[in-house]
Length: 159
Ligand code: 4NP
Image 1 (cartoon, rainbow, N blue to C red):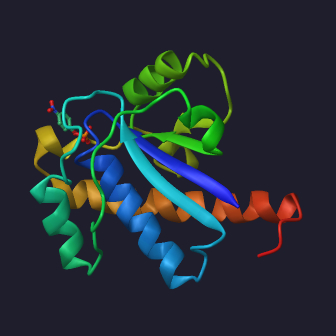
Image 2 (image 1 turned 180 degrees about the horizontal axis):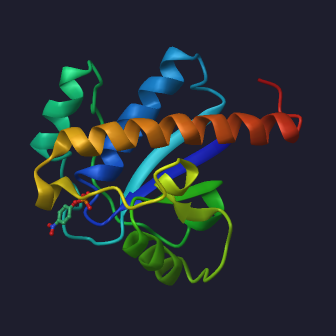
C-alpha cells in the first residue's frame, strides 16, 4: 500500500483537482486498494469547503467526480502517514517542509518535477485558466502513477 498527498495553498483548486484526477486513474486501473490518495492545503483559509467551482466544472467536462473532497490543512502527522507528499509549486514545497519540519526529505517534492515540464502548476485561482492547470495535472498524475508503480515493483509489492 502506498499513500499520496497532494498539497497546494488553499486546497480548493489545484490539489483537489490532482486528487480527483489521480483517484479516477486508480479506479480505471483497479488500483484503489493498492494506492490511497488525499489532498491538503498549507493554509487554513478554506478548511471545510468543497473544491472551487472552476475545478469542479473543469473536471465535470472529463467525467471526473470531486465527490467527498473537502479542504483541510496539512498537519504534522501527514509526514508519517504518506509516502509521497507532492507540492503543486515551489512555494508549496517550501511551506510543506516548514510545517512538517522536514527540510530535506525525498518524499516531499514538486509535482511537475516528475515530468518534462519541471515547473510550478499555475494557480487557476489567479490565472482563471483551469484548462491549463488540468492539462498539467493530468500529465503530472500519469508521471506520478508510473513512478509509484515502479517503486512498488522495486520493493516487491505485489500488484
Ligand atoms: P489553490 O489556489 O492553492 O490551488 O487551492 C488558491 C485558493 C485560494 C487562495 C489562493 C490560492 N486564496 O487566496 O484564498
